[in-house]
Image 1 (cartoon, rainbow, N blue to C red):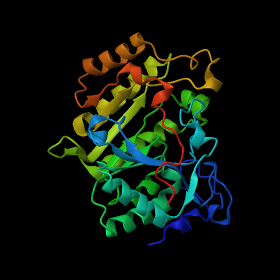
Image 2: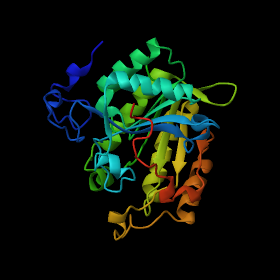
Image 3: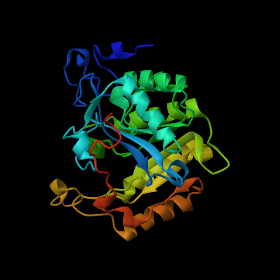
Length: 303
């Protein structure tokens, strides 16, 4: 089924900008109806149950509806680097990653392409795609849009960036972010149910909620962990990330111009342990290096 009619007046994300993307008008995500992908390759640096030893088949989409000021993928989110592809080519890319041994297909920041993603996944599954599909998201989603993905996505990997609406406004111009993320995670869990793993420990179904600790904001991070654990318990996994890397344009910011300290991250992890979080992942602080940001060079995208 062709879902691109949803782009006639785009209301896919909570911003509901109404752009006529089918007519070439870019939405607030920066993109028209044309699909642009910046990289499609095996990625080794996701959570262990996503990457495993073989890697996750990550497909990085160009554009983003959230636009965080500190974005570490700004080359694709703001500069809109990428290669134009069709939905048919997307299906081929998924199948190629499967042939390379990927543990899953990992769709990174695809919310503004949900109609095309639905069509490409349906085509790929008809052609033999059998590995799980991971929807890797900033967490700023509409429930109605996520519902189009039901039955096509197996694992949801959203962020929960902020609990404080003021932080969400200051850093992402999205004061409604906390409420949108809460509703989205509930819908994701409704679709997947509780976590399911194969005999190698690779997640086959479920939800992992990521939280990137920002420097100077341990209190807000603790509130996020409290909410996630008190609301969802062991039905989800929580991934606490220390990898914040200040990009060049942020290096003079009084807070976001530095990395997270060892003490800040320890306080957050200790808090998670103290309230009983057991289904979780923590991160080696050595990953807070720009070298861990992928090169968006079109690998795996071009024919």
